[in-house]
Image 1 (cartoon, rainbow, N blue to C red):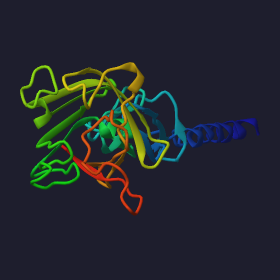
Image 2: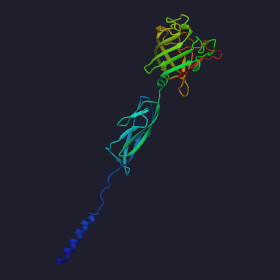
Image 3: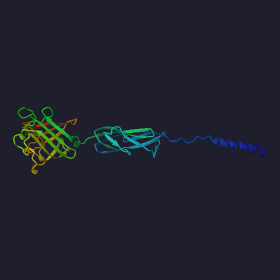
Image 4: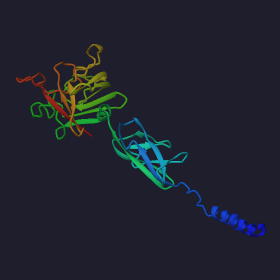
Length: 268
């Protein structure tokens, strides 16, 4: 009897090993999806936005320790570093993408300009572009004091410079009497009000009659400023004081309806 059981047991044992040897190996995880968050964000120029990437395998499980590369579709709008930190560098929109082993995902970033950033630049008025009030032959093409050209430059460091052609500089009201008025200084803005106010403090002037540098009249009376919808024109609504920050129309006081005269500067 024992001789009969021995071969049967051998077959069972061998068969058991054969069965175990046919089991499937575990499936290796593969990167199939990269998710970027936030999906969209908005910042101002010079501000930062942190993006994060989540890497998933074929089963939708999160994978850790995976190397991810970042890129911005428009580096004139935003840049992004190796850890997904984006910096706004210009107005517009950019796609921030993350890639891992051929799989990628993205989020959108919109960069806007603050009021301070919008007004930085050169603003002009002359007989064909812009308007400083009464554009008539009797008052000069720019108005009140007979201005024919005017240019105001507002810099990002808070300084300003202005220059323009004006007959007062020919009639002996200034030191150089070359027909061109130049003055400069610093400025601050208050955009909590609508329209905003821009305060000009004059520190250098060659026409003290209108743009004095004396401390007691600083900041100069400049009226209030308002940007148009596409930020290409700056409307100046004049106040009534003599020491003013920008040229004013002849009729600089309120009219019968209580409305101040206005002028417009065009951004270059």
